[in-house]
Image 1: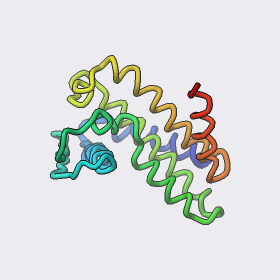
Image 2: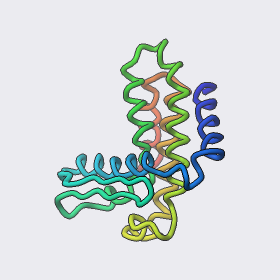
Image 3: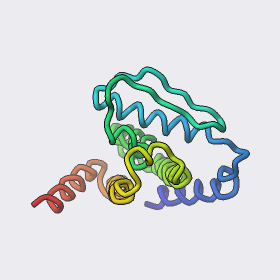
Image 4: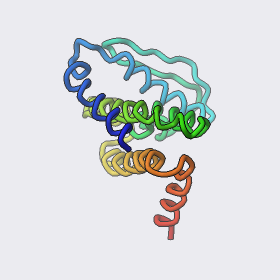
Length: 173
């Protein structure tokens, strides 16, 4: 976890110094947020009709169909950039993965900081699903995803699947 931790700490430091300020804009975080909505919409068979992301005015993603709560709050618990990188890392030769773990730490810190800044009472997504539900669901969902990512870094590349299986075994009765 050394390179992962260095990437995580490096991004958190850069965010505190540079990216946290409003002047730096939020286009990348808005784009990833809307892309996550779109990814989950597609995964639940809702065709995308529009994705819009701006530097300072937020973004919007439109799709056909009724939709569901998972599409609505996916950006608050689904670390799209991190999980994309994990999939790439699973396919990499083992010796190369170590060098990419720092980048994985960066993507996790990116998700942490964007989720932190996007979680507020004015956020339409959270208003739509309801704050009580979001307050109960989102912390647990984030712990699960971060647990999977840390297990991936800590163990063998495919240990992420054993972590998921243990999680299912320990929570089902």
